Structure formats: C-alpha cells, structure tokens
Length: 182
Image (cartoon, rainbow, N blue to C red):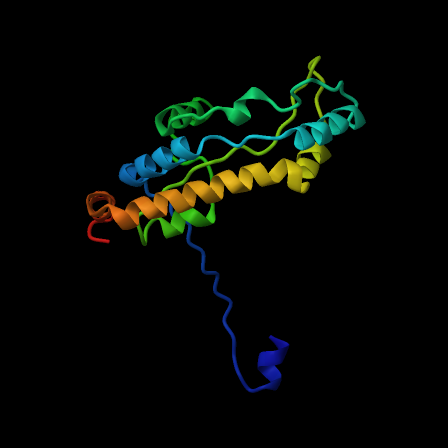
C-alpha cells in the first residue's frame, strides 16, 4: 500500500487460486506401468544396505540382514494402487492429494506414478524417528536407486510414445474425451 501511495498508483488485493483434481488417463497409466514393469523396481546394493543398517542402529533399532522393507522392491498395478489408496479415503473424497501434476494433467495426457522411497524394516516393531526418512532421502547410495528407476521409467514411457502412433492416439483421444476437447 505504501509503495503504491508514494508512486501515485493504486493497488487492489485479489487472491488468485486454482486447484483442479488430477485428470485420469488410463492409456498413459498403462504405458507408464508397462515401462515400470520393464525397468523393474529399485534395487539397493550392499553399500546401501550397510548404510541402512547403521541408521537402524543409530535410530535405536536393531540391524537386520535386509534393512529395507519388502514393499520397496515390489511393483503394484495402477488398479491395485488405486484400491489401496481408496481404502483410507471417505467415499465422498474423490482426490487424495494436491500436487503440481494435477493442473498439468488438464493440458496434456499425463500419468502419475510412484517409485518407492527408502524405508527401513523394524526387527521388533520399533518406530523409527522422522529424521530416518530424511536421511535415507539425502544419501546417494540409498536414494539413487529410486531416482534411477523413476528416470528410466519416464524415459522408456516417452520412447514408447515417440515410437507408437497408436499409443499416442489412444492417450490423446482419452485426454480429449475427458477434457471435452482439450
């Protein structure tokens, strides 16, 4: 207000906010899951497991032979993942989160996928403190397998779309149908 007043201008306070739910595209989801299935889940090597065991102990737990939870190396189909997500949502809630991708999904055919973030196994029900997740996400040996898996998946899905006109057309047709014309 002060800057406007001394410069001979006026200002109006006007909030602009927009958040749309993500727009599904099953054709893109299929292409992306096919790519993820080809790439496979992240795999952590012995160096990463050694670091993870050290964190298990430093966080008050017990080191385990395989310090990462089994779910990290298991793929889940988009349909199964959606069903798991919906179990914890009230029936009236359509969307589970807000994120940047949701708006982009209204401008181009888009797929959302998740790749495991490193998480530790507990030998005896021990709850690890919050810093453990942050630490695992900042150590190259423990986070790089996830990033590499995601990057390979995106690259392979993009190559599929570049090489397969039918796949592109199916994704675009679904997008056009869901948006009412794009």
